[in-house]
Length: 247
Ligand SMILES: [Fe+2]
Image (cartoon, rainbow, N blue to C red; front, side):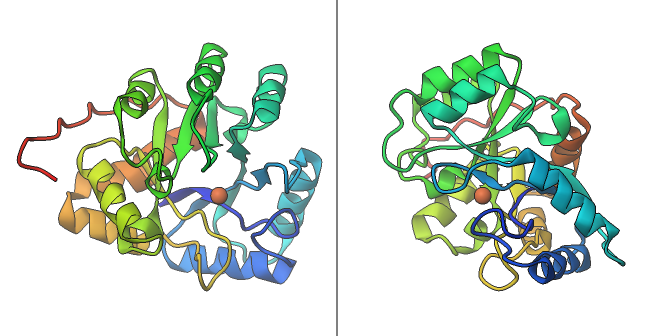
């Protein structure tokens, strides 16, 4: 499995604090079946994005003995005005492996202006991956605007732990609905440590396999993330319509 969202790089944000933390997270990821993992430190008002330091840390960790998952670079890009302006000037700065894919995190306050930001990124040829909309009260209503963004080319990442209620009942229901209706394209860990927010996808993979289907689990945790780290296109399946009898 391939994890496109993780805070395992130490000392850059609220994820791993020390190199030992980083190595413990990577070992746990490998033991739970993750072959590739994308380092996505925050870029927001609390944590400045530092590409040089990211490359340095990746090199340092890769040189440590026995590190299993292959490491890739990316960013947990907060969709703020300043960040979007900078991404428009420096499109390759925040993307995953210098390809077209960019994780985007919405503010929890209001979605005003977000459509314009996403359109600007899409116009530039970037593919925004909207991270954990199931955890955002504005996004989890999955209104027409949210579905329009998907139709225009944005993709959706659900957090593995949301499927088990770690972010509350509403997020859990919303995550399953997105997976069932094919509004989600990825499961990722958004890991911050080995205890509360671990870097594991295996339980989510098994749960999606059992409740929705093995093909869906494979698309969410293997095939679509593989396309992201390779910079290849993703041929997303059409969302399923909500039936009148479904909640
Ligand atoms: Fe994150």
